[in-house]
Length: 364
Ligand code: GDP
Image (tube, rainbow, N blue to C red; front, side, top):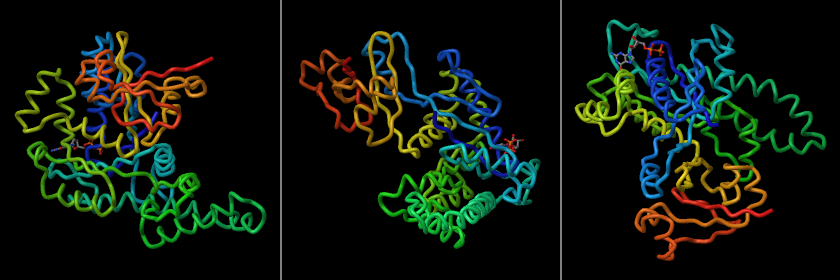
């Protein structure tokens, strides 16, 4: 599965946010079996309103959303890149995630100490990211000599990697994260293979006070401007509110959120934004047994999409019968859509579109 790692300085609201996520996941666990939760890993359903609609039309007995994991990565202190505190473990944990979620403190509270003695979310971001950049620098510098030797010989992989390592080093030495680099076309895969901490897509969570959840505040505005500069995604959340919402049932939650001027839990926005940042999208299968969402990469073709259900489906793919979500709803399901000529028969080269409702035909 895909993982989002939650990072930030101490006392910014990470645990509060993470606990809200796991409470939500625990509430979901009743409906969705097989959801395991480790102490610092929350496995949550991706909120997908279209699924309910599909299930109504198809008369599905069960709704099965796709899922994404959140990992609470505690232990960052200044000097983490030097192995101070839990530094090494912290960095190792980040290496394993697909998206880095920065929780940034955008609330004032005299009772809650800020480790730097002031509320400054942009400076906090820079403090954490500096540690990641230093760790990347060190790991690249360690690798470079050996790689340069190999690249003078016949080692094709080394010949491809060396300029990419130099590209990353150049960025980092300028004080920029690796994700800022302009990667030459065709080398994206090797680039990703460098496995740098600052290559990963970044999402900023501006954790605001309860009163600013709907509007944001001056601090979150600064985070927003920083997010634009950093090509990071951005979500305003009040972790305190989220932890309360997570304990309410659906009706109570809706009422509570409406009072605060919110349409939906901030966690839903957070989860969806993480999903989008990963370049992921959703297609559906729908029948009497279940209505189900499946996660694929944007640009995946029909056989790859089938492979998410079962690896055999990819190998034995023949064709996909496809109805767009809108047509499925407009014509009240598969039969109606088919009669209206809205069911398409697609082959191996079909690029699956977000919201496609699909049937795969496979052969021996
Ligand atoms: P962590 O160290 O980053 O995991 O931070 P915690 O989640 O433990 O939060 C530190 C303290 O800040 C706790 O006492 C939280 O209740 C409090 N806190 C978290 N979010 C908010 C918020 O939005 N407003 C206020 N006033 N306090 C918050």
